[in-house]
Length: 233
Image 1 (spheres, rainbow, N blue to C red):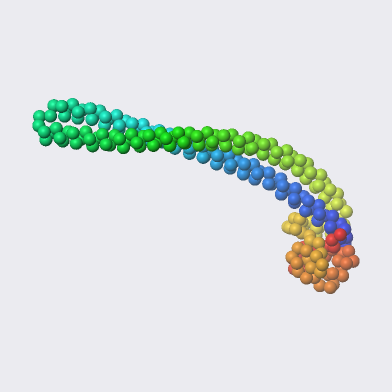
Image 2 (cartoon, rainbow, N blue to C red):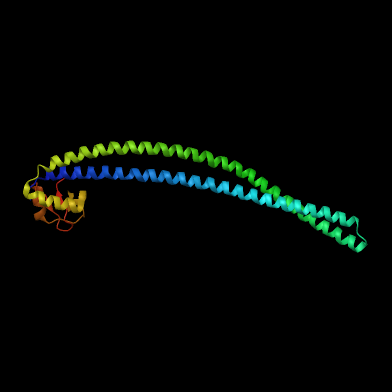
């Protein structure tokens, strides 16, 4: 291969730089998505709290309606008890009033418990609302920061890709085809520096013949992984 290891090293470093810039650009949307997931999660928690409060209010209203209906029945029973014609009838009505009164006491306790739970939930609701506001503010900041960062990275990418194009112009025509084939199939992983006596890409030990070529500044393909090996600085 008619190419110097200095040129291959420069190409590889630039390809790695381009890959890193692209990786950072790709991370931007993921950061925005992660922030949106937090917003959605906070909204879900807030809505769940609201739904729970609404359901408990409905439960309390239903029980209060039952309480009023039973109080009306007790009132009716008291009227019937006053007009009872015998002791047996009087005692039966009295027992019914006692049972309904006891049931109403249970209902009253249940209603009170629901109202107390709702008071606690109202406090939690305020916490959820405040948390959502903070997360939404953070989301706006993240969106802005990421957008600016991506814009800067894209400008940097254009500059570095220009550097790559300039370096590629130094390649001989007989090597260009091999270079394009390697880079199109493997990208920045198409090359690797020599690591002691091994390929820096796959760690395979190299033969003395290959090592001699590399020592003379002649990059060569790794017989194991196919990467173009060059001497590091």
